[in-house]
Length: 430
Image (cartoon, rainbow, N blue to C red; front, top):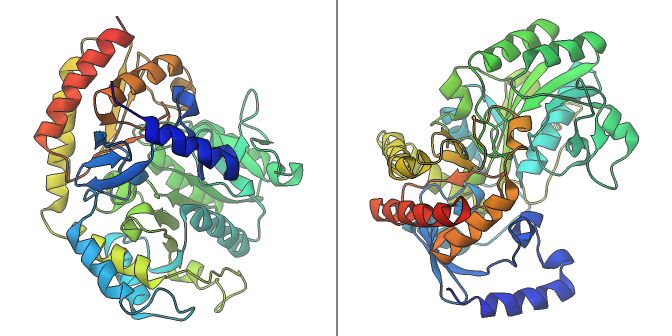
């Protein structure tokens, strides 16, 4: 059994000065029935906590560390930029290079605006869509998470998708009324909403691969049908690829499924581990932004030179012609290692994977939409999480998050994980 005494003591201190003791709710570990760990450092595919416990890390800072921890090329880029300064509140050459790189990965992105988080990216994309179309409402999908701005903290109502209701205190009813909620993978519900609110819907936004109810893939034809429907109705299609961007494929889910959105939201990987976000799309859309157009968006630290240097160093490595073949080989090797264990429990488990994203659900019969994911046994997942943690495997502390495979994970990491999985499931499932 691992010793967690230093983490426990630090969490007690944190609770005195930080709400809930954490700066982001999932870090509280409440859904897995324990207090959080405090990480001291990371190397390659591993992290070490302040008590000295080492883990194979499958969180990867929730996605950006696709090259693993402490990548030397990224560290060198940060050091070089740091020697010049940290921020100027002015233009810098790095942000231009970053824009060019993003456009080279995503053909749908002709111009891009840098921001500081995925939340800023999605919030700004919706404002831009409203400014461009002159319409107020937008459609999101039950279970797709797009950050914590007011418009997105909306849950589906009962019955057929209808006006949303707030999922958080502090979100007004007027905001909720402009957010319409449909079921992911159900094109008929989208059509129903468009018929009910003709010429009122500015945009449809979704995670093309859901990553915040676990990894849930679009059903064949769903994204293409959504593209055809929005084009016909003059509605902008926004892909939130903050998670799937660079992970599902080189050009994200839009490359994997051959569907080009009007606007794309990015984050995570383009900061190389530093805070960053971006949104981009066609020239005529992006030129609606101030100072060219009437849609205002700004940020003092947007295009921060340290984040740009780290992200550029990251993207240059991802641009290597062999990188994605290697990442897919690593992701497939992970699945091959754990698949024999999972297959022993076909009546209790389901597994989804898209590129280097995957989730093991404590539910049989597959997971194709949010309603399926909600049937997962979260109590069993909590027990499983703790059993795996005690065996040196660091997983998301929630059933409804993705595992992130990195290029730095090794066959030995996967062997250890499969062994821990076998032992843990024997206890949890009997």
